[in-house]
Image (cartoon, rainbow, N blue to C red; front, side, top):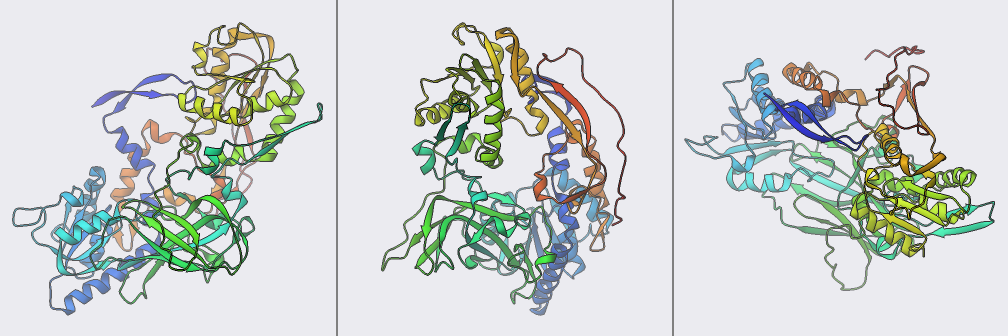
Amino acid sequence: MKIFSGRANPTTGAVEWVEEDAHYDFHQEIARSSYADMLHDRDRNEKYYMGIRTAVGRVKARGQKAIVLDIGTGTGLLSMMAVNAGADFCYGIEVFKPMADVAVKIVEKNGFSDKIKIINKHSTEVTVGPDGDIKSRANILVTELFDTELIGEGALPSYEHAHKHLMQEEWEAVPHRATIYAQLVESKRMWSWNKLVPFRVCCKTRNYEKTIVPFSAMEKCPGAPSVYDIQLNQVPQSDFKLLSDVMTMFRVDFSKPVSSNPGSNSVPFKPVTSGKAQVILSWWDVDMDPSGTIKCTMEPYWVSSTPNNALWRDHWMQCVYFLPEEEPIVQGESMCLTAHHDDYCLWYSIHRVRGGEEVAAVERPVCRCWAHMLWNRPRFGELNDQQRMDQYTQALEKVLKSDSVCLCISDGSVLPVLAHCLGVDQVFTVEISSMSHSLMEKIFRANHLEDKVKVIEKRPELLTPEDLENKKVSVFIGEPFFTTSLLPWHNLYFWYARTAVDGHLINNATILPQSACLYAMVVEFKDLWRIRSPCGTCEGFDVSPMDEMIKHSLNFRESQEAEPHPLWEYPCRSLSEPKKIMTFDFRQVVPNQSLSTEGSLKLISAVQSR
């Protein structure tokens, strides 16, 4: 069955109706998932298998049948491990239907259909009893409900429900417990991902310098409510200063009742050095058995006993949390770090210890300045890059004159500020969304520019001469940056916007940037290849139906598009020279005919065998 779906094209800005398979959204989710990465995670799989064996052994030693409940079974791998370890029966719960269907095939292919039942439901909807989904309560709970933050996929409410409604009074859990760790750091680089900091505009020709500052509500805003999960193992230690030792913040015992109610835990500490408290780096580990001898950890390299051999995972990474405001701290003073949580999120706060004073409740951070709702972390980093800002200033300085009529089209751009600081009196900027319009007006007002830059809330194609005060634009500028852009070439919307306003430009108007070039290079990733590589067998089990499902989903149009990955997080080596594929001349309007090119890339290095 085919359906028509309306999709906004981030490059052209137009809504396009495309014919899709009725299940295209499932296919895209499968294609863009990291299921294969988990199956390639040998350490994870081995530790789960060892933990399951010991749990089954403990139940059998009590003279009981081993009835396993596997929540979030995925491929059914952990269920098959349990049966292979001697479990009498296993119920695998999987809410995502395409995955549940594949789990049925994998279980059947490996000969476990008589011992494993796959249930396509959310665990909170599972019924127990002779006519229920499961015949009796289980005494072994096996789960893989964790994300980088540990609880972000709903682990706490799922465990809470399972303990109350699906488990016997005495049960074993794999993993047995989880521990969350945190370390306080100062980091100019990481802090630049969270707050707009003052930046300098220097005009050499006018011998003029001005500092642009954020508005007060932006400085006090606690920021985005979501964790920033990254590959901390790719952040050099020169980029941050450790202000504390590693602290144990939470420990959750999954073999006992778990509560999803909001809570907090405070840990006293003394800073190991003085500095600015800005960022909390956090990670977790799980003990697969009660003794803690089978451990799976996400610890970063500077904590690891083998820093040069840190394990790579993309489904579980490390967390960066930003404090609401940076705070100077002094080595040796008595401080307290508090971790707060609800049923899905964690956040942190610090305070100085004063005798008898209780820790005040701190609400989950929610953006109140709107910037964190419009700009992602990399965008904050761009805006806080002084070198980048200086390059824009130098480029604008070459083309702007005092009598220029300047029009900027980019989402939430500070280029209009630069233009005014360079002496242009007539500056217009287009902000398509009302939220972005409001944000930029506040920034302009904080810098006394509210009467110097006119903000127009319209789509470019709807601009009228009246919007531009019946003036023709002599300089058209953009970074370009648009919040709808996921891939670099989506920012070619700038070209379409330039075409839409062509009638408002003077002849031979200056366009900046005047062109863009698309380059390509063949690379070999050190680890990222794992997220797409077929697995075949995993811990002795045939999971090839999973490979086939991913391959099938990758054949769909949406799945064949390039994927955005921050390449600094994923080391690779080049196998070819960079090749210029295409040039886009913004001085001309978008041509009516499609642009295309073809050619070849010469490999200069061989792919290493795996």
